[in-house]
Length: 429
Image (cartoon, rainbow, N blue to C red; front, side, top):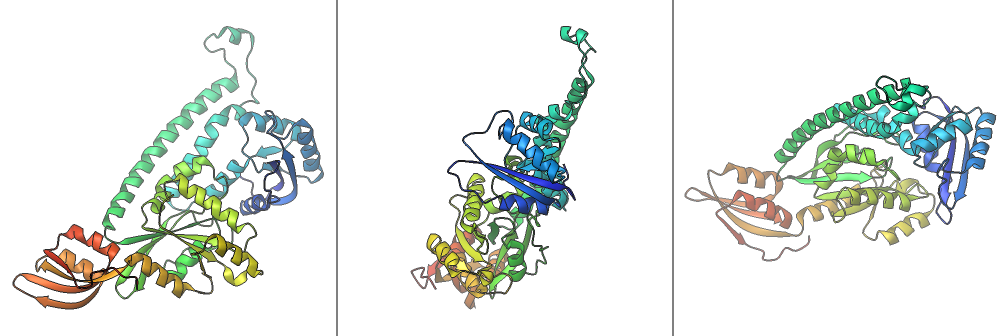
């Protein structure tokens, strides 16, 4: 359901004793979808009403406010059942959509690549499928003969519903097959990256991931100050120091209560984070609810299997924070975090230094003897490590190499002839 250029009334029902952001995020989502917010209503509830979520009295009040403000659509900051949406629309008198449908609409308008478009379409269809009854409820059902269940006696709406369900289910199967093929190609691409240290940028939407990607590499990623500006994963090479290079990937941003259909359909894209050696978790410190955004992003990461992943928190947009107390609080919560500004370049040298330390995992100097004909291991060492000395013997090459502990584990898959430590301990630089 597109909400472009529509006048929107926003509604949020929150449980009592629950934190309320005064619908600030829903406002940003609605505006990101192109709607004009004309009014907002928030209500504390003990539990959702089964028919209207907010109760019939409040639903009538919403209808009055919608009429007064000439609203075209009412957007709930909650997930509603098809029955609740149908009942609310009858009372309110205008179109009603929930939070998930709004986010799906935004994703649909942002998808650029074939993969993202297929993923969004799949998420939309899986959202729509159980709601088809609502879509065809306005058509009359034939009575009389239909009660006996005779063939051909069902109403127009019932027959159309059955046809649509078959079509939607068929399309869902087709989309999943197409995405499996794309995922297989992606896995083959990942296999070609074997031996390279992989870093993934993660975080809440609009936290500055794409800006940081551009600052660290030549990605030229699309940047705009709006939610979900980037849906497509982009991977570029990041030079940490000399010949030490890593792969840096950007990912789709997270948001509070991200629809489970999107998490499922974007699973292949989000697996960039699962396969990474290091996550750079970008937190926008310029917003009031920075900690809540960080924790919501962490919940999504835990959900996709990144709970124990090595993570470095980056407190971004530190150059525009009005109160130092905001950053001080976040640094207390995340003591190892680095304050940066992807826009101005503030502390990006410190970020590179810390990343290099994690990349190495401690360093040692080794004497490595390899077969002179083994070009793969020589190429690997020359492209990733610091070669201090090189000597040639009979059919062998002896290299003295400054190497990181993490890279040593990766290098051993090449099966060198001999590895001898010159420095016995892996000391931090």
